[in-house]
Length: 60
Image (cartoon, rainbow, N blue to C red; front, side, top):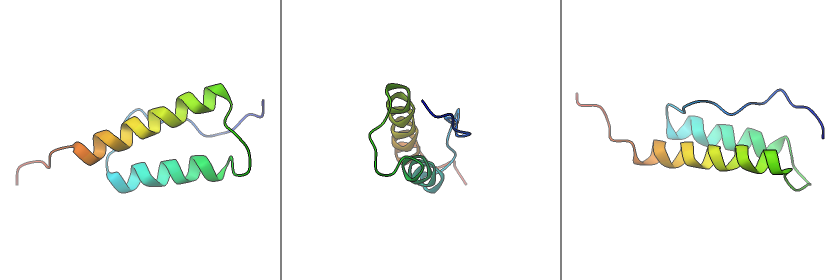
């Protein structure tokens, strides 16, 4: 399996950051299926995205 410099972030701070992480991840793998380890990383990115979408804004 090819090595990549990409790694799953521990936390994503915003929805836009989560979206960009997913776009970058998938662009690096365009035209092929995901390896099992990559599928796990992709699912983590989706979890991070969902958490960012549902995160309550901090009080002002």
